[in-house]
Amino acid sequence: MALIRKRINQETIKFQGRIRVSNHPTMSKTFKLRSQGVQWTKETEIQIERGTLGLDLKSLIRQGYLTFLNAI
Image 1 (tube, rainbow, N blue to C red):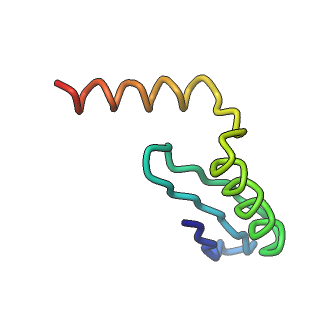
Image 2: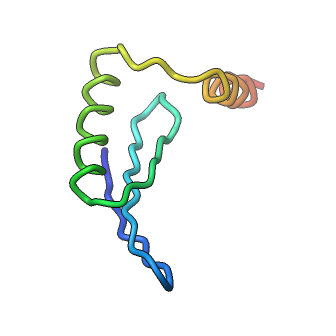
């Protein structure tokens, strides 16, 4: 599931794209334009569904660590 949040600072307005899918770490990224956030969330969700998303090492370690903690 994708969500686009509007983040208002005193000087700037930014948009945060957030993706939450079961059995995957939550992913988020900040953009200057809402359209960029929408495009990123759509592309990333498609990659997750196809299984072609290359997660970075930090995310994989965090996911494995949480799985380990839940198994104990």
